Length: 213
Ligand code: PRP
Ligand code: URA
View 1 (cartoon, rainbow, N blue to C red):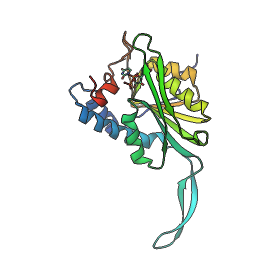
View 2 (view 1 turned 180 degrees about the vertical axis):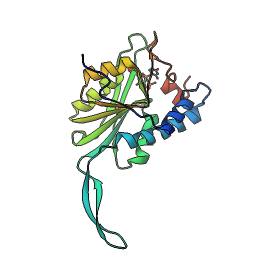
View 3 (view 1 turned 120 degrees about the vertical axis):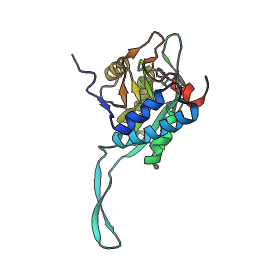
């Protein structure tokens, strides 16, 4: 049997784990939730981009000529899945300010838990970019699977998923649908409850970011 965890990188950096604990806490209010989510996205982006290829560049410092390193080849794109992915996109852009940004609007049908699309706008050169799809919650996996399908349909060959909390059910489903996609997460939680929420999770990410509940 294929090991569905083989494409998962759990970012266990102490700062990430510390901030995630405060984010999960039910007493954390909207303002702090947003701040922590943005900071977590920046820290995680550091790991998600760790294997980007470099190439040589000749430069001159005030002291001497040297051969230095710059990012090689293809450029990055960020695709937050609305709404909750927006809470992480700014944190990635803090680290990669030149990245182009696409948006995919999806919501989960509360009865079927199926993703319903309501918006999409991707960079015109998506096929030439390495794309990071961003959504803090990987629950059943339906939203991430659909978001990644849309990005691939636009011609993108290299897609990564950055989430924050993943359920084993979502990881398995995503691995089956997109075995080429690496999943970067800060935590793999226990399971989904009867309403499709991650246990212990952090509740409804969109509502906690935007204060809508
Ligand atoms: C949440 C979350 C993911 C999705 C995860 O979004 O942000 O997009 O659920 O669940 P899944 O893995 O089972 O698809 P939601 O549908 O609540 O929309 P929102 O971000 O607008 O609140
Ligand atoms: N979406 C959320 O926001 N939280 C969950 O636990 C599951 C889906």
